Length: 433
Image (cartoon, rainbow, N blue to C red):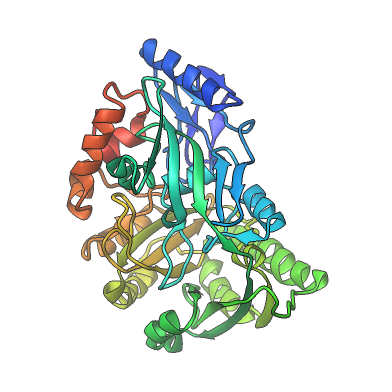
């Protein structure tokens, strides 16, 4: 088979593809690959923009290893198989009267892929998805199956919650869930200067806050989501409004503007200014996962960095100065989110409250000058790249950005001494085993 990720930025042709249906079968595959001196990677759903999942030797397709394995309704802890997508998991939790505390806006990823790359949502009091993990089961390079938690193999737990697939193959994930809840959503365009001036207040006074800045436009699309109890009245958007606002406006029409700009680059700036003005305000409420998640039908490339919360406005000011000077115009908005500090070794929010700045470009349009300029800006404040999104950093630089980088490498050496789980991307960001 030929494997490609969602954006087409990474491709691979594995020599063998294994489709295990149990932890025992995963262990058998891994042990056989290691004994043969080959390498193996789990494919996930291919939603990372980097080559983190690329496998040239052996690949693990976990699409037959899905579903909830155990659910304890008293503790609200749920153990899920690693190949389960977030979309499937959200539906299964909903049926149990449970929900995840925080989510990003994409649900196509597998649970193992999402946590391995540090996927996050937004909220100044909330961490990324990995902070909701209470235990992991992994298959190590020798085929052994181990469990880790805060109390059992705690160093492995600190490392594996954002493990890049470098420590072993995750077989199950145990999540701390909570009772289902409703989110009220307020989405509307606002003057960019007003949004920046009120950034700290908005982050502090809303459970989940983010905004999209459209380059060349004077407005930002602001999203404020706040938690309500399950018994609160739900006021979802009508199917017609959902279709018009999300499918027609944000996918069909916006995709058309992007294709027009790609064909005639001089139109990108006026089209971007137009796009910042046409978003319509909307308010609604529904079960949390239905509000967190948004369908993205327009394909793009993306780079995202976490910066210290106190640095975000300075970085955005510099980025606003850079964009008009680029040789090639930018067709996609910049997304800004926040997250609480955590203690996970390779989490982008390790040890510091963070803001996330994600830049995008429409697929097929030039992006390298833009992404390089952005990387230089965030590097000045110790920015940490999202592990599943595009960046050019290597282990020598990343070691200076993560206090526990060498601790992670030590655990990696213990779990995978021969480099069974490595690939070209991991060789760059972690160094050779």
